[in-house]
Image (cartoon, helix red, strand yellow):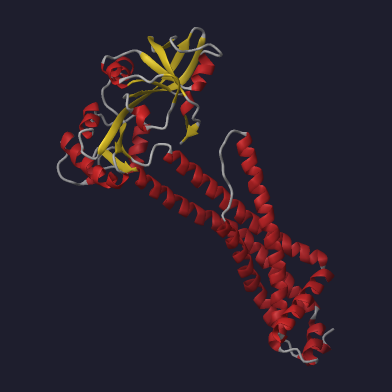
Length: 419
């Protein structure tokens, strides 16, 4: 009980000292507020970005295996850069997709060939991505049909000139006119509009509402003039079998593409499951969070140094007070604890204020994002708030210990003689 009363008295002395030097206290708190609010904001942005990308990845399904071409004996980054310069791998064909459909663990699959073209209806034009794909695309992907229907496999096999368009294409080309049954022109080829996709929005820097979907073989033979695929997607019956299906796909594609051995560097393709993609995202955002956390900690470190300097000034100004307290029986640990608590109170006040400011900023950004049509959830978990509070307490102890130790080491007689 006495110990509790002693701690309570030390807290009272700490608050009395802080109230006597309001301007100094406020300046000390401001540095901590900036540091903690920055940390909260960084955690919120990182959490929102990670959640957004995971939601986008989930929109492709959690039971899919993604097969993409790559340049043999090149890293993934180098292969991507080469494709960006126009270098293409032409070995992946529709036969690979059809072969994958015969695997016991495979439920469905679709291939894709993408072109960027201008769609025309009367006097209206729109630059858009034209997805040539198979009929099973709509069954695997999260794209829904709002009006009309998607094309069939028989339409793909017969090179039918039909198109399914996104809602932005409808508004840009047709306005309020019903597009179903109308014809749009792509590269001087007329396509009959048979369906409109439901509004989906953007994912991975691509707005699906701007896309046009046509049969794959129609795209290859009438618009692109080649028969290879940049990628295809396989859907498995059981998500637990994805790794097994991925291994079977590698063996099958090496045989199809006449690749000898199991050296992945020689492969002209990559196989990645949705779980692999999720793990990659977790690794990337873990590193990003650590980096941003380190940057935010710098501002918090500056605030902590400010608190330490002001506490040293406080000790210097209160030497006689310290000497008097020691003369009437205060022990060394009492003085140490008093100034340590004073530092802790300053950082706690700054930390609580910083958490409030950080939450207000994240709420404002979330509101602004939703107003702009973006789904950005920047809400923090209780663990994130506890991290902010824990960091505050840690900095209060670390940066308050030096001044508190200096105060506790003063000799009563010398302190009382001080001017």
